[in-house]
Length: 359
Figure 1 (cartoon, rainbow, N blue to C red):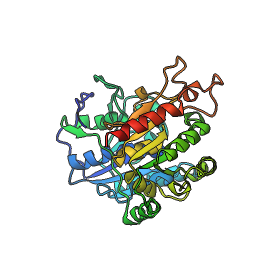
Figure 2: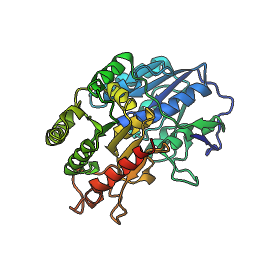
Figure 3: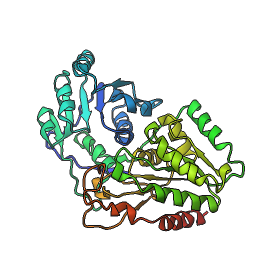
Figure 4: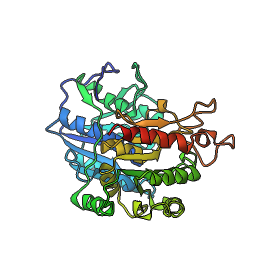
């Protein structure tokens, strides 16, 4: 999808040609996947520049193999004194431009003390006071703006050209071999559905019993199921696996906790469909151009983190209590969790069957 932007700040930087650029995103997996479009478009806008990207340790693997990146700077915010080390590191480089999609005051302070000439970010929250150039976070469009559109809008101070929304990941040969090995047991060449039932936020999870019922139904219908998630979600995936495997043990595998982020990206890319919550898996699926069906409960599409490709779909129910927070939480504030309870496995199964009927 190509998006054209109009600069939202009068201090446009037409003619500015930075040689050293730093892009900062020290949030979650999905947030880092989303900035890959910004990284690529920035590289195309400034082809002679070296682009470094600063992330936290857990998300660094997502950027491996990215041809647009010169260096990945790892900032472990949990380590005492690391902030001063990072500032010293950045000072040695002396960046011409730093772009911060993460409106964190701590991040803005790091950039402020980093001897960076131009510090570009959003005109919101306290962090804006440490920036030299700001772009409005809100956008007036004829549709709900996706977070990627807001990210790319940061470049509107440089250009009004059309920019490409597609995100991207680059699994290496080892990750691709891992995925091929996992799928090699699919000897009947069944359609592959990767299911990721977890989320960092408990209320973002579709109910375990719903996932179990759906997977049993999909196995009965002749699909090959790959269960995946982080090591912290192993028990969840294993419970679903143990309750479902009797239907067709040769058609379900559980790789939860056994794959790296790029391993997961590789197997997502080789799958025919992904089913998941509002989580990092959703954004990995979009980056790998695999259709994704996602469950949105406490969060809503207007937050901007919805799947954006043509055949993607969001399961949600219209309730007056939605949304109940930017991320969800550990428990439903009203103690009923109807936003997830009312999405039934039968409705999801019907959508999956109709999707594959097109083939």
